[in-house]
Length: 110
Image (cartoon, rainbow, N blue to C red; front, side, top):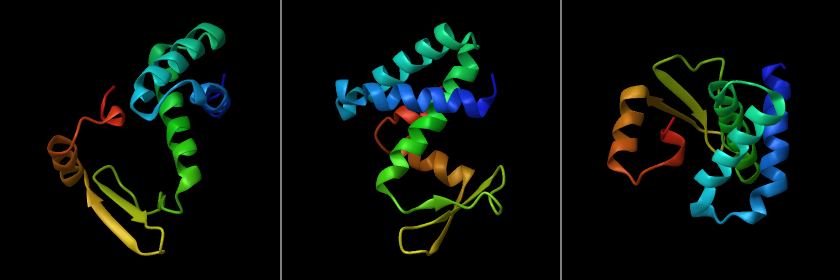
């Protein structure tokens, strides 16, 4: 199964079941989606996790005009276009500082 097909399966599962979970309960929905993909698609936990997180990002983007500029982004520097079209640049080290300083994030866990 291709990664794109797997991500689409994850997105369908998340869309079908997101109303069953409150926002703080998102990690449980993610866990359910991963388990569903492992069982129904016969993929590894790691591949199911990656596809699920990609789908979470895609679904979360429904409410935002911000986007990541993949043509400029590197392993250590993230280029983002904010909702007003302005460029924002974050480093991996800076992102880690934000993650460690802020509340625990579901997206920061593996």
